[in-house]
Length: 434
Image (cartoon, rainbow, N blue to C red):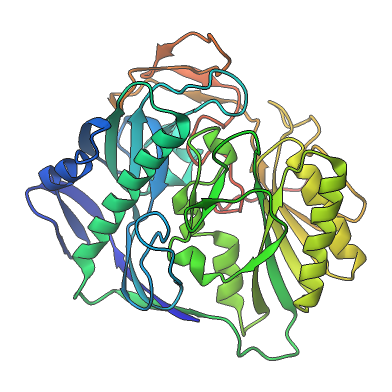
């Protein structure tokens, strides 16, 4: 499978009456996008805003973030299983509008009032300390705001929001068809020196059997109740992986993250140079019993062994007991002679002195931290609010009071900031030894 990813950088966005791209400026047909979205009758209102890095703006009600992409050759289409048929992707050429994102915000009343199934939205500051906490603040943004009908189930609301976001992103990328890209990057496995270390990416995906949705969708199907399976890394680049939940946003990477998975791209860019990248193992984690956790760990390690891996990067999404599955997988891989580096965020509490991990095994001798989830952050007052909510819940327990979204206020964790928890090392953190 050979995929060319053609880049069209976006330096600025403006709203007008036509869709056009030239010299880094994307002009968006405001009326056409809004009217297209409103063809879904359960969307009662839709409007667009534009944000740029440095704007003293706070976006509320964020449900997903998507990079505009469109296939111009090869089989299938971007976001297969959601926008089109379940067809193979990962070949031919795909165009991307880099340096920007579609931020989709939505107002709706969830039916679940407590527990992990509660629908949650996120905020994003485009300036100040809040911006420093999220790499998404560095992107030019087209904000698609939605107001949904009352009484929709979580799954129905998610489906409506996701389709609106992905259709808008694809429609924007179509402006590049027939244009010459600034650069083209090619992705293809195989052809490596057999003496190079054979490396896999093992991607753990938290699922919750008690909910109709899960943290990630593959070809539009929620990942759950399955043993480990291999997937081709090019499928990530064509949108076969999307966010499949609008709950607990900081615990789940958004669609933009799956499109630009930094560990996958890092391994690909070292392929044939320092490593022989074998591909990706997708591992369902968060089994309810310890027996299930042991089975998935051994199943994943066995699959890695059969693929001939010498080493693996092990990453995950989620929280809670899902981390037990991850550590047992690491232990099983090391037991089979596969050298494993765990890439994970930490806890650590407000001051970073609490226990950083929920579970540990002595086999975990190589770990890479992507930073703390627990560090408190002070957000200043915003000059402008974009999105459906002028008031938000800083605390998320049932019955928590509302506070002005303009702030200022204090967050006791990064969960409420979109991109505030860095799973895969995209934030470019560094450390100092004392």
